[in-house]
Amino acid sequence: MNILADYHHPGLYNSLRMLFENRLGHTLFRPIGMEWFHNGYWDYPHPDKRWVAEQLLENTALESKSVYYNREYNNFTKIKEISHNYITLRDMKNEADYKCLTFEQFKNTKIDVVIASVPQHEITFSKLIKDHKPDTKLILHEGNSHVKSVGTIAKNIMISVPEIDYTFPEGSLIVYAHQEFDLDIFRHTKLYRHNRIISLINCLHLWKDAHDLWDKYKVLLPEYEWRMHGQDGEDGVIDNINGIAEALMNTSFVFHPKPQAVIGGHNLLNAMACGRPIITRGADIGGEMKGKLIDNYNIIDLDIGNPEERIRSITSDKLQEMSENIYATFKKLVDFEQESESVRQFMDNLR
Image 1 (cartoon, helix red, strand yellow):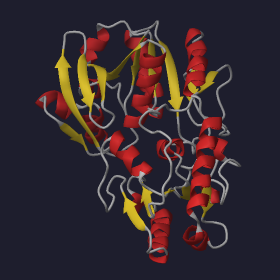
Image 2 (cartoon, rainbow, N blue to C red; image 1 turned 90 degrees about the horizontal axis):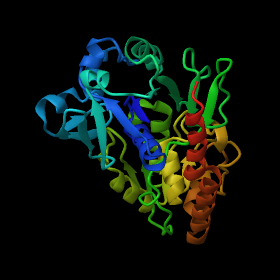
Image 3 (tube, rainbow, N blue to C red; image 1 turned 90 degrees about the vertical axis):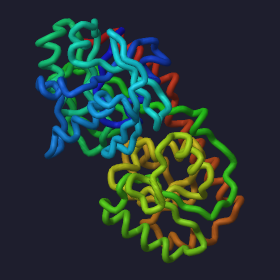
Image 4 (cartoon, rainbow, N blue to C red; image 1 turned 180 degrees about the vertical axis):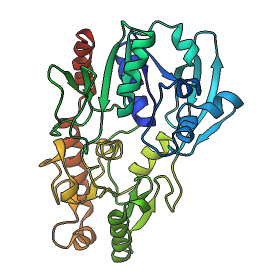
């Protein structure tokens, strides 16, 4: 199959590439160039839609043919090759090549499936199919926990955060699959005591409660080195997946008390795959993680008792035990190979 998927999150899109190209043998494309925006087929929930479109449709990279820094999503890209059929874009953060279609190339390419991961694209891509590819199937991808109602037009729905109480249109075909990442990069390693706590939350300063907790415990636990490496982080952003994995392997804990984020996002699952215990709040844990992330077993719950004393008094043996426990929890919850087989059956029965 030839599949077109929108792009708005580097980790999500790379997971679709790993799933559809590497595992299932399909060909995946993404839109490139502002013609998608000017023709009314690209939208985004942002007050300055054009500004975001110029980034996510790689317009600067396309026009300059040089390395382009995507400020909104902290990603470097570069046009690698331009051919008659498609454009090859190098994603330097994920160290992957993506096939891209201008709007004109799209019109001349057989497309079997279109995937909308931005809610607004369920509408615009439905119109795109009606206008240009009437035999093409539409899939809506949802990966946010705060959304309660999923789908209005699409009959085919992919969910990447299981056990959220979504509602779906009657007659929907639904499949659940986590967003895949490379387990050779994010691999489980023995946890040595590093006396380091890192945060990979993007723009932590915008999450006031989480940032206040960071400041609080940074003062209470001065014996730990606190490193903030998400976008706009005070210790510098890490802009490639190998660097992120290395940072995880060289920390004792991952600080992640982000509202509605302790459910299965990339930062959480990356840390779990590396066997790194999480510092979070029980109130933020949801979905399939509810009841699986447990204080003093595989996480430190800031909502319970005196967390700074539990962190301060933890022994190397206990820290290693927590590391093994959180990795075992990851293995119980996530099986990319098995989930890809569910997606294969889903793709064979699209409506």
